Length: 505
Image (cartoon, rainbow, N blue to C red; front, side, top):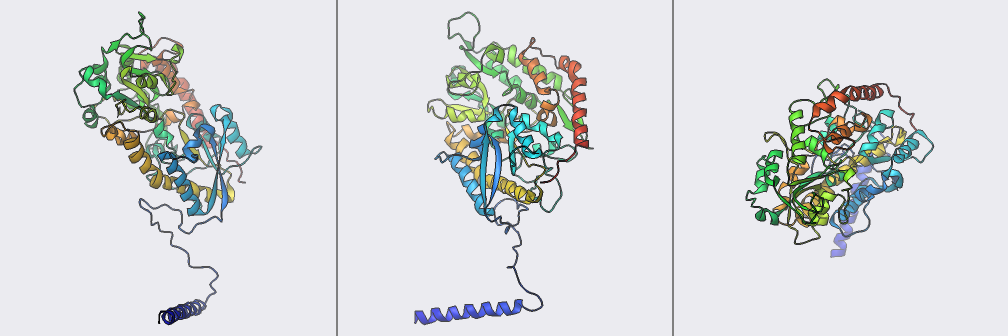
């Protein structure tokens, strides 16, 4: 009976297929199956990549710095973030029927990597479908006309820069006349890994009679430079027996004097080097508003508190057997209540179960303002070569899908599983994680600093005393350098306005 019933069903299916074929023959010949509507069924906002878009297992090559390999192409590892990265890549390959090939280059640690990018686009080198680079160096290449404008309106541009998987501050604050040559966001997790934060030792708070709940202070918006300074003002212990103040003693706060910290502190207190105006023009803005007073507050924290140790390159304090920076190393050695460090230092701290630490955003100048920070300038940005020709649609589809799948697969693991659980020393540790991530912002001047006579270096050196005595005067810098930086800004914008685009491949 079952066999007879099955045969009857099969016959009905065949008959239905024949009837459909006959109907399709009326008036036109059907040579292709009906096209998918392209509507997304995934959670989150829909992308412009059609659901039926496939590339028959074509290879897509991605150029990247060697140090960024783990960010895009994790080895076969059981680490939770690495596993998410591998899952992300597999999802993209399956979704678009492509083969991703990541090609790391060792030149990335020097300026020579920019030559690799340039040669790949202008000829004389291998070609790539997607280019990833160190933000500080790679940004300078944009004005040479090497990269595709992601805001171009075209049928083969599947990138939607306004979607949640791209950092919207970067999208809005680094685009000149709506021309956007780079992207960063959930795909480039180095913007979070390299975000400076304040670590604090929860066990040391009681010893130094700090009774306030710092998580609540920060959540209520009251985590300011002035507040931090009151906590660390007189916290100091001589550990090495030397008369002078050294990096081997105990302090309330270890303040790193280099790019990891000062650049981000400038952002956190509201200083912007150059900002985009409503009419699309760019204005030098490092003296706007309360910038001078905020600059002085950073100086006071660095040098007018006995409980703060500020290290600089000249002092040889960039060491770290377990970590990248001396301030992180000092915290790891339990020689401070507070230390500035990059967010990814938590991975190291988490390996020591009895190091009970908390994470706070960088302190701000004005309690009424939102928290803000900027990643250390070696974070990754992604660009597309301008000469992709007929392969443009493939590259934009792959980049958009990589970003979307990073939002769907990598972001939840990175945010919720890794930093709020795996790398957290307590249930409290992750309380401010979302606040830190939401505070990551950019400005045109900081991003293009390398083209603006290294404008960030001038402010950084003024505070750290590299090459001269440290000073609290922002005016001293701006009087000396504003004309020079303005000249370089004018040159950069003129290049954008008049640049010649390399021919398509």
